[in-house]
Image 1 (tube, chains in turn orange, blue):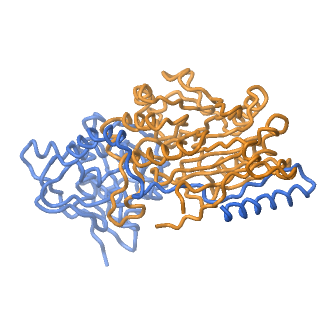
Image 2 (cartoon, chains in turn blue, orange):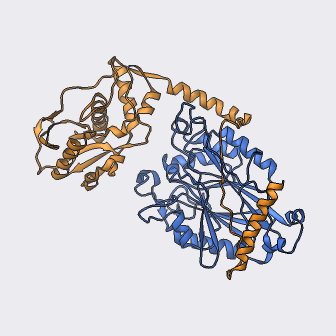
Image 3 (cartoon, chains in turn cyan, purple):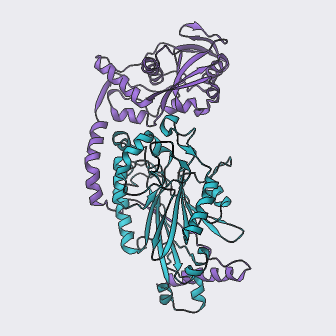
Length: 310
Length: 251
């Protein structure tokens, strides 16, 4: 098995407090922990990959993921669970049941939100509409305009989550469907420029919704040679997103990518391969004090933590 | 605990050094591994397992349904093969009634046909393994010069079976092309049934993007393979391929 090099760090508070010499434990009391868990490109992988010597054989499985998530929920006070699209397509479960079981299981796991991937259009807008009642979590989509389709008003562009007073604004971005999905499937769904849309979302979430943190659920893809818009180009082009969780390119990253803007604002980009082989986990700590009066970056201190001891 | 503490201090030290610089203070994240493996060490959640069980049972049942019988395995090969011929021929047989008129040519590539069809019983699962992709059939209308390029591609690459045609490979080029028995006419247009994936330039079939017209049939390739096998079985016929020679390779 791949050796995991987890940071053996428990919560580290905001440095500002440490500078004042507040003891470590007291400092922890001054902070709020937020655990963000995420998946992408599940591709209907309900059961683990057959353990037959293939790459990632024996890994994955939604019932196991549920155990892992439940374990983390017991340990952590503030957990958000997201998916970045392409929930569907890849095993006969989808062909025979149209995505019903995937949505039901994700609802059981208490996903907080997801965004749409290109394969989530595979059964057409009708197929998507038919399955939506099985999902007890919202699909966030800011750059698909469904207003001329049967799915109008079914998807919000963003949602704001509140955890111990920390406001986390989450919005969704999808990939251009033309060329990837048949016209028959996506119909009159209009595509909006993801960069311009993201700028509007940041403005809305920071200014109007007073969010302390902005998260983008993206199915744009991690990075492309030909300069096509991706999570990395989005991170570079738009300031004010703290975290971009991605999908589509099935990218396994050794560590999240960090993009730093001239102002000092930092955007993290992460993606966890495909098929639920891994669960993405990012732990953020917010200072209760600075959260009130400074921008998020001054208070944010992400650390990764082991789920199980040793 | 000690270890935790020293790591914590290291992060603080980093934060302090950044604070010393002339930029707004920001705690640079320590970018460690953030993904957690979902592996055998985790037990399956019993509630979800119970929810999956009836679906899994039905999938297993459907996948193991025997839909046909092959006296010999249908495998892949250079230029033409039992599996390649079987697929290009059934694409024509299944597409024509939907298209409403005869189609001139049919194309697939060996890369798209993932595994051979086995000798003996053929199950739905076998067909899923052969065609795991959701490729859809399309009918392209091609100019004569595009058709020539397509045959040259097939002659050079060796992995692109073509139905309704015969040709000779000479110095890596296609000559003596016959379509439905008639000599190929570069001034004529031809229709071709293939997958939307190949029509979009997949497998470097860039010339197909020059199609004058693309018509979708609303048929999944996997579904028509299954249908063809079911129809053969219903008619009391085994699953076999036409193996009449289609490509002649000159030394």
